[in-house]
Image 1 (cartoon, rainbow, N blue to C red):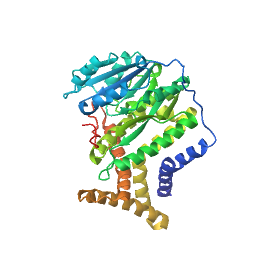
Image 2: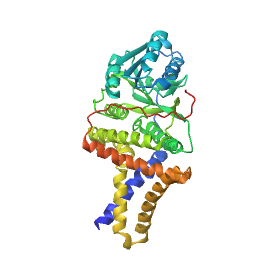
Image 3: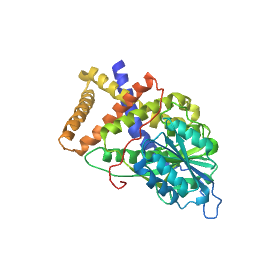
Image 4: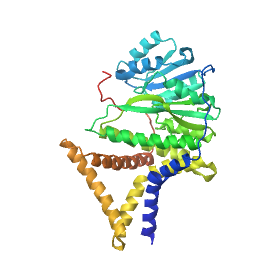
Amino acid sequence: MIPSLIFWFALGALLFTYLLFPAFLFLISRFRQITVQKFGPGDQLPGVSIIMAAYNEQDVLEEKIESVYRSTYPSDKIEFLAGSDASTDHTNEIFERARLKYPSFRPFFFTQRTGKVKIINTLAEQAHGDILVFTDANVIFHPDTLAELVASFKDPRTGLVDSHMQHQGIDESGISRQEHAYIAWEVKIKHLESIVWGCMMGPFGGCFAIRKQLFTPVPDTFLVDDFFINMHVLQQGFYAINSLTSRVTEDVSNDPWVEFRRKTRIAAGNFQNLKYFRHMLLPSRGARALCFFAHKFLRWLGPLWIILLLLSSLLLFRQGVFYQIVFLVISAAIILTLADFLLRKFGIHIVPLRFLNHFMVSNLALAAGCIQFLKGIHSNVWQPTKRHQSGNRD
């Protein structure tokens, strides 16, 4: 009896987070969509403060800074606060040149490794704009990025707006195509959450905007600042949405081991946020609780559901064909994931295997991140993920 209950509960959790909840969002979006007011021609636009932390980002910084100042947004409404986290390459020199070229560029030089969170907290406190735009050094703006990102803040209910990440440098030899497909699917889910309830479950972090009055400093040891900021906005009763017209460009990751370490770090940070915002799962939080539970909570526990399915289906193996099929499917998935790693060493790339590998390894990273969280996290000093593959920024 107990193995059967565990089996169906675990299977239901996986199906709900990956299939049923997205399908539910799609269906309800046919009947319910919120309308957000946007700035138009002649409207008084708010001041914008770009917030960026950088550590040894010399390869992308000049293009990044230029992309911000090529913006169609009024230049007198923009200030750019950039913090160098004790960089040892030419980052500081690039900052100094930018300060001379652009009067609104404000560099901050940290002499000891401080961590991204402490830097963005410091810069946000120093910012003068009504809107804070948090961005990464390797995320390149389009000319209309800022205008589209800020447009929805005309609506007083809007608290946070995420940009639309577009990827380049996709390579068949690594995992970039699978990562791109996963991110594209996540964008669709978050967009549906946005238009149905205004409660997107977390920006992608590379470029998003928030009302300064709603910003709450991120705890020093937190690893995932963007989700923390997003949840605080929702907690205060404001909309968190994404803008598909506010486009930015980033190289998608291609190295599976680098990506695994990044996902493990993010997973550990997700469990920090889960503990901090566990009250947001209460039914009294309405749609916010539903999205948090279905989109994040159940998915973050994905490794647990897979393990429970494997063990319970093994115990129930003699009790029905369906249990046998589930056990064999999960076992085959594990074996094929290992096979894909071996085939990759010989330059053999089988697309279906690579997608299966991406799913299984992502769940392995969730498990590793959970273990890291349970051990305790005492520092958030980071090494930015090197995503540049396409060679067009050298």
